[in-house]
Length: 146
Image 1 (cartoon, helix red, strand yellow):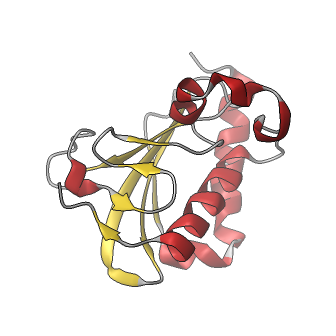
Image 2 (tube, helix red, strand yellow):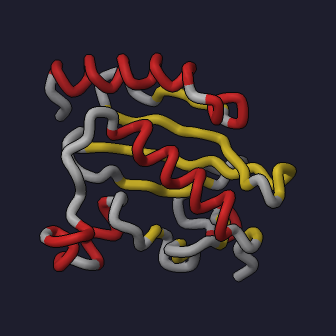
């Protein structure tokens, strides 16, 4: 369960997203107000017509969140076609193997120390969303076709 401080910071960071230029490309929806989760509809600059829904969920706001792409019609987290293909994405395994996701650190425990260690962040929500958007914009190759 999220602490009151984490919930307050998360809400503040959600409100601060409005100042980012990228926010015009996103549809951001807060999940359960008693939890640290949000869904964001986004796309790559390479294919703006291909819309994806991603869910970010923290159990501890100081640690990496779970990051899952969600099938828009069903809400399923286990539909490979809901996933974009980009550097680090593992659509058929339903995780992103990068050092800003809970799943990436679970797969690579050695990342806990050294260059890939998750940094202490002033705004974890912004950090994860901007990194994810950058990966989509730069390394996107299409929608997963399992």
